Length: 329
Ligand code: SD4
Image (tube, rainbow, N blue to C red):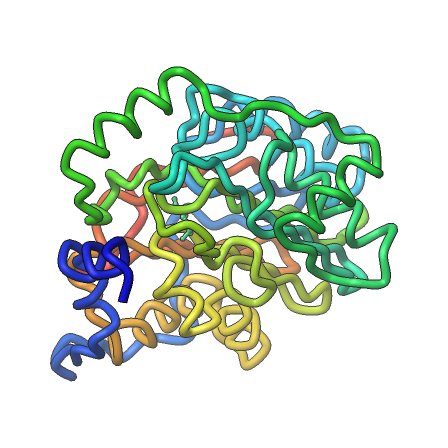
């Protein structure tokens, strides 16, 4: 075993996560399938995004109002935090992995069930747009690492240095202890998952992130995984996730939420049930996961494992941050 790996296992609280600790069944709730989110309304257009994304919504919601597709809206929305050097969990300015490399994950899905994704993409500021190009211009769904970068450059994207001075300074500070311990709501939670319902009644979604800060080199999270960080089924609804990707990937959270909605769960109940799936098998107490769901009718749901999850909703011509998302513990 290499020294780095040994160090990681010694220092990481993730080793507890992977040890399969069970949560007592008393922690599980039975859910009213019709449960409503108090902020949920009916009717589009709607844009729904993880965390405080008023700037991103300001760029994207005029598109929805002018009749643009949900696909164009979610891409425009995701591009805002990607280009923002102060958003340290997405794109430019994102915190690097433990080797000092900014590696990005993103995906996008449209109302026809088409999907595109990139993982471990370096040097490109807008992975969501590369994901869209993968969807529209290649026979594949996902490109990774070197191949994703080569495709991006061939498609006309610029190669850039994404490690800002601020992010590099934070990484160098982290190196002093090199202790890897994801913290609830402190894990630079501005990763954006965004889902939209357009004027034509179509749904799309996107998700983009620099992943967990100081992750192992090569680590890929839930955000670019279709069905985990994002899922869209234009007949039913759309869902996205944020938080500790390892928990979301093992339960395929976004796909699960959409399938529960297909079975008659409200968006709110579906998010709560997806959280229950996580706590059944995983040690969740120290970690955050937040889910958002949007139905074909424009109703939404939101739920997280821990206090502190918030989200941004555009509906009835109004953008607002909803602070008081309900949570499990
Ligand atoms: C990941 N889900 O890479 C992402 C991180 C995230 O807010 O959402 N942070 O696991």
